[in-house]
Amino acid sequence: MTAPLLEVRGVDTYYGPVQALRQVSLHVDRGEIVTLIGANGAGKTTLLMTVFGSPRATVGEVYYRGEDITRVPTHQIATRGIAQVPEGRHIFPAMTVEENIVMGTIPIGQAHLDADRQAMFELFPRLKERRNQRAGTLSGGEQQMLAIARALMGRPELILLDEPSLGLAPLIVKRIFEVLKEVAQSGKTIFLVEQNANHALRLADRGYVMVNGEIRLEGSGAELLSNPEVREAYLGGH
Ligand code: ATP
Image 1 (tube, rainbow, N blue to C red):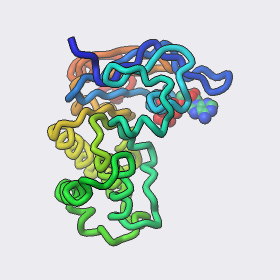
Image 2 (image 1 turned 90 degrees about the vertical axis):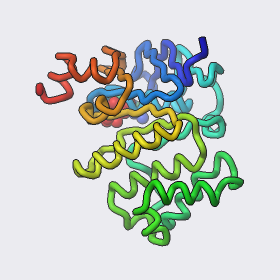
Image 3 (image 1 turned 90 degrees about the horizontal axis):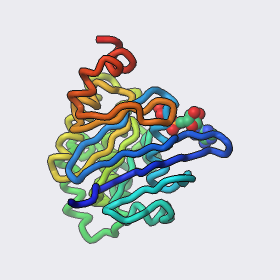
């Protein structure tokens, strides 16, 4: 049996005296789209940050491609094939769209720059139209697309996304989730943290539900969508 691409095993994470994660275990296999849903403050962002080693797990381990990366320095993790699209997007507003895209090559160098930039402009025609515009002038949805494009420029095998739908209009959210599906179909593995349980569970092969820093439920996207507890807490009881 091959190891999962990403495996979190029995992780506790603290902020000073505050425990944010409690015995969290989950895994993401190659080619999957896996989502982690949960309310505000459940610990979802902390889990993504723990994978990147900042803050570090106090107890437990994080494995990537079967290797223990729990104590690997944060700046080295990106060079191993994991990219993060952080909440709030963190694009460089004063730089152009194209300059932001080029920044995404930092983990791997610029050997594939021309081909990869071309591929990004095909995936995101809107970014091509706006390539010379300052990124800070883009709409929220375009900035989210830019953050995804920048992450892809590092040729990651695994992409971690933190609430890509946050603050975006429904039509734009739909488009973002379509893009994520295309990205997955192109061979990338996706781990998606979301409060938008409906969209996330429809997209995902599997999902986990986090409550107060613990994994409460896990199952296929379809199983979780029909789970009464999930429906009540995250889908407005519908
Ligand atoms: P959100 O959807 O708001 O991002 P989340 O599920 O991602 O929520 P986290 O941001 O991981 O949740 O927060 C988990 C817990 O850790 C919360 O109780 C939060 O208050 C706490 N926390 C987060 N960051 C810090 C920090 N830097 N210092 C202290 N406590 C923190």
